[in-house]
Image 1: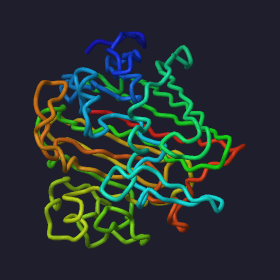
Image 2 (image 1 turned 180 degrees about the vertical axis):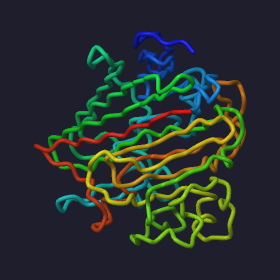
Image 3 (image 1 turned 90 degrees about the horizontal axis):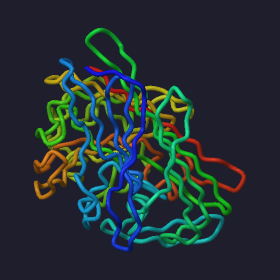
Length: 365
């Protein structure tokens, strides 16, 4: 395993159809791990980390070139999603007595910021961190009316990669994602990163043998269009109980209404003891490689999605096709449809306030 000084590199990565140049930044940690981030969508394209024997593999799903990300129907691989991550029922909400109608781009609902969300915008990038870290700061301004949202939103997302030898045979690496936002008019905001993980290595097959634990005694049941009903239901006695480690595939095809509606897992979990501080909320492990992913966040929820709609038609960075359930996402977030659910934690951001959110993905073997 090669260790060295943390570093960051930059290279051209093509251009959008309207001629905007896209760059790829490569972050190297002291432990030899590597993360590549695109200015298009703030996309985490690759995360290379070692297994128990020191063999490196990319553990996130993505495309080898920009054209893949420009495809209609790209499933948000690795992207920053917003202005509102996840779903808003019928694309409608009211704020301060004013009704707002957003794009409907997921059946009858609004999903991940609309037709041209943050995942399809080119961000401005530059290094911004202490000398002993390697990080990338992405910024953009979302103008009032973009995708029909109120308020001009100023955004900063910082990716920080740290790696440190944890022993003679192992390393531990952290990818930290810090979100900041301010607005000039009251608006709603919900930001997440939509990375799909496969700890055996992307393109290696399904993730059904991965063991998963989520620190959540409750979840938000959904209706037939995957909008929360408003209930906070116990996971006990259901296939959504991940309070103890269990293989993702152990109960994914059980005869349960919630699984039938989503074709597997596509559900928001209500994280225990939320107080907006950074705390551990989930652990996933691939028994074959020994790679472990620990997730910590300041957010109140996490959406588990098991790539139920991948069908082998998309080819990833390895040159191999992605089939159904070849990855899983743990989208740290506020709850879906919160603007229409007064009992959910609020996603309203007002002038003079600053949205501050942090999620950490920690990799070890």
